[in-house]
Structure formats: structure tokens, C-alpha cells
Length: 308
Image 1 (cartoon, rainbow, N blue to C red):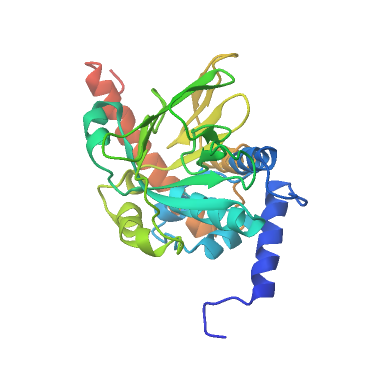
Image 2 (tube, one colour):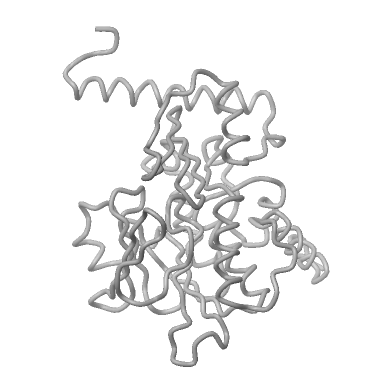
């Protein structure tokens, strides 16, 4: 066996551990209910986070590597999260298609209708035998952080999940456009054709850019997000927010590194045993420096300066 490869028994063990991380040890045969349960569990238990990117050691996006990281208590961003989730769903017997996608701001709506940037891995999943009329295919996305809690039927129209509303529409040139106004990913599009089954190779160049370029938001800003049935927990820099349309939104600034790491582990479920004291010091210094710059910029736009 060549270096960097895994035996079938090793891969089976990783997938079993992955399911344990999701709290689903007996997933059963593919079903709509099973697919929905898997996405809910993934969003609740595997955080969207960029700790290692912030520390300058971005992990690769090979799906099996990502699955190993998840079982060790880590998270990731779309290429990690959706890449590994697609592998798991494949293993469980779902018919998974990977798509080249893109994430856009609301001001980029015209651009989102015309082209696909390639900075997102999107999934569609067919549940075998679920709907002979062809309506058993779903848009599945565990890689947005604050996206849908459950899969969306791959049909045009609005979809209500609790207090949140999403929509899907066909793109003029083929493919699909997802809308969730006001979120961190308000527009997501993806091409209709499959991106391939390798899971990582087709996205490697974009992953390198997103995880190393100074222009990338993943490099500029620390972020951790976790979705549950009622809302979204988000930590951006030192600002911890809870989005809950029913109970009301909350926001506060974390005081120091002790609170920051307690929240990262307790709220987001991100294990911290891979971080040395040097790592923790470096990450907090980076987060705090970016926060102070952001806070100063916000004050300046209000026509004041800090301390005035």
C-alpha cells in the first residue's frame, strides 16, 4: 500500500467513527428521513470553522482526511464539510452528485445569474427509490455555516424551515441558484453538470487561494458557525452572535482568550487538543488584532474615533 492511502478496513473504520461523531451509529438504508437526519446532525455537530487557516496551516481537502479531522473534533469549510459528507453519503448508498458552485453577496445577484465562481462545492443527492416520478433529488449543503437545516427539494420555489425561508430557482444557462437574503451566503449557484467523483482534485486550486491569499475572507477573518433547529451561532473575530428569529437575536464581544476558547469548544464543539500554548497565543493575537481594526473602522464610519 502506497503512502497516504488507506485500506478498505481503515476507510470503513473512519466512516464508522464519522457516524459516531454525528450521533448516528445505525443510519439504515437510504431514505428521505435518513438523509434529513444526517444533514441535521452534521450541521449541529461538525462546525464550520477556519482555525487552521488562521494559523497558516490549512488542511488539505481530501475527503478521507477531512473525515479523520471531524472524528478528532475538528471542522472546516465547504470543501472539507461537503467533500467528506458526500463521501459518507456515497458509502451509505445515496446517489450523490458534486457540483462546482459559487457564493455571492446580494449586490452580486446579476453576476450570480451569469457565471459560477468555483469557490463552493455544492451537492445534490438522490434518494434511491424515493420518488419514481423524479422528485427524489435534494440540494444538500453542510458547508455554508448558516444554510438550511435540512435538504431542500431540487425544485423551483420558496421553502420554509422553522422561522427561515429559502428559495431555489433555475439559472438561465442551466444549473441552480439558492437564495437566503441576509445570511453570510445570500446567493449560492452551481452548475448542473457533475464536478466529478474525486471530491478534491477539481477544487484544489481554489482551495489554495481561499486558504492562503491575503484577499480571502477565510484568511482575513476568524469564523466559526453552527446551525441547529432554532437558529445559528456565529463567532466572527471576537463577536459572538446568536440568530434566532423567534427568541430574538443577541450579540456580544468576548472579553479575552479564556472566554474565546471556552466558547469555541463549548458552543461550537471544536476540540482544542491540537492547539499548543503557542498556537493559542498566536490565534488570539490574530483574532484580537483583526477585531480592533474592524472596531476602529466601524467607529470611523459613524463619524467618531475610538475613545472619543
